[in-house]
Amino acid sequence: MKTPTPRDGRAGVPEARQHHTTDLFPGSLPAAPVPILPRPGTVKDAALAAIVAGKVTQADFRRSWRLAAYVDELVDDGWAVCSDWITLPGWRDPIKRYWIDLQDPATRAAVAAYKAQSGQAGFVAPELLGWIVLAAVAGLMLLGGA
Image (cartoon, rainbow, N blue to C red; front, side, top):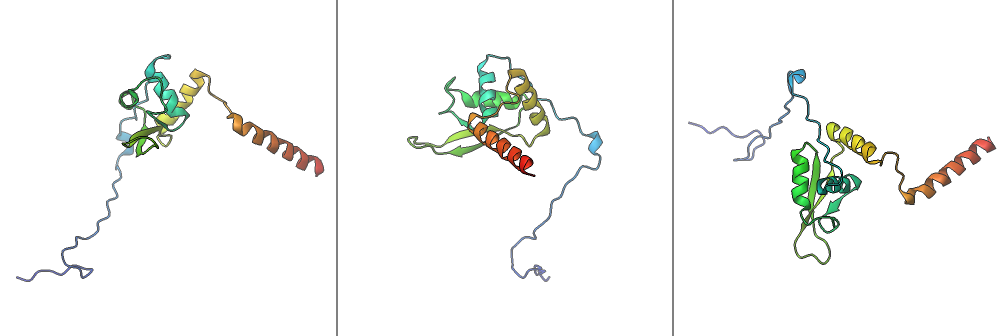
């Protein structure tokens, strides 16, 4: 019996397959769970506020030494959280860095609701305020000169 030769001429190399899976009935999928907001004033609420504000590590989070546990609870509550391992100067071992995944539609909507609830909606970073004023003045000068 003859052994068939691969198409690309390399023996023992499996064929590259394209796996494109799509759902045939997207309307039948269950709705994505809406993330649960933690009670205000709790450590879980502080952890959520920290990862919503930006990337945070245990070294940055001073409220508790159990940031990973609270992030796991947030994930269990439906929040989409991203993480990676980083090495900080002065630390022997790598530690995890967490941030909120705004690509997830349910999480993005929950972050907007969380910011509105906690009074962060419409917040402008102080370091950007000068650039906004400069852009407004430049815009008025361009409109006034035309």
